[in-house]
Image 1 (spheres, rainbow, N blue to C red):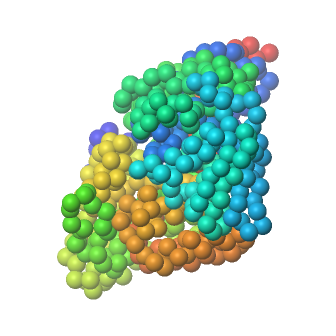
Image 2: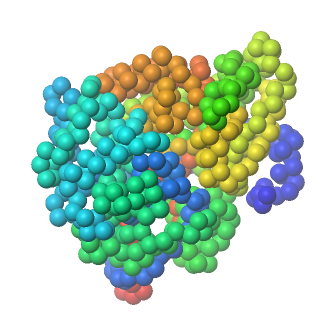
Image 3: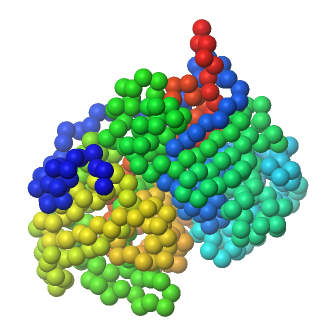
Length: 536
């Protein structure tokens, strides 16, 4: 493993010899969300190459779960709504924000005129209906829990959709600003069916060309796009580069023009480099440990280990972690500690959701002893094989040793980790979620009984009731209070041990502009382009 700690540092970290102490508070770092062209005009045309830190999963809005899939789909499959740099929901394929009935049970959405899918199929209310019905009914859909208790979807006019709910569902608009709002060509869906992800067709500045597994995905400008006059590139290639050092080297050499997920170990070097610029923005998401409590491959018995069955052991693991010391030491203060799925920057944040769980090694060891668990208690942690993830996992391994835990680190390639998580083939997974503007998108599918992302396999009636109550509430302050109650209960169960929030760090060549990165972590390239060399 090529770790930037160096061999001696890595060996010390593995053995727990480096004391991890909170450092000075990191400096304030203002968000930089957009690369603007300034006074220089765009040079029309060209082929842009973006280095992706991990390979996307299937390019299917209904079933995908990878952040990197959202990067690619952003250029090909626009949504009914999007979020702005300020985190506000704005119309995209919709013509306006939804019209909601007084009782909250009916939502009507007016659609943009003059829009065509990249296969020349007209974009209309029937296409929206078909997409939403697919999200609700397709086996394996990851969107069901995001869309709420829908009872009917109707195309009431050619450019007007009506959605009816069994009970009010406040997060609906926010869901349509993510994958649930990506509208797919009904023609392509009929032709391809469940194979749609291998030949995706949507509305976008670009259209799908080809995919070389584990290597690249290529898209080209779509002449049928409704805003084609503001698309500057001919082609984009997303090249898979999982090694952070290689991404940094390629952006410096100019072999790639944009690179995502720059390591905190490299960001300051790149900010000082000639002909390289950076974007950075705080995240709505989180990174953490997912504990397997009952999600197992079909035909297998649920786990019976103390970690899976005894909340005291999971609580001990949470108490063993000094979250602030870890992020300051491992990530040089570029990331922030986290104790819940709700970002402190969210309008739904409360003291309950923003405060960090205590760090108390003695209490952790006492809980292990009370639970009758063996000490040291072994935990197998599956982790992506990226440098930063491995650095953090090794630091975590060293830190929790004093509390009576012995972590075994199992590195895997990113998509293999996703597959293992889906199958339930893990004891604990160190992974994250890029975050959604509404807390429902960060909580419901993970914590609700039978939720699409409920990888722990847990079922807690109290959390189920709180999350439904929060979704039905229309007052933001009331919703925030309910979510705070839910977080308190979540920290009693500790099915997810929340650890830190990344800062989205993206590098680009200085002659590339028109790209942006917002708090959802997605790099937007639809209107990017190369700048003319003459800046006079």
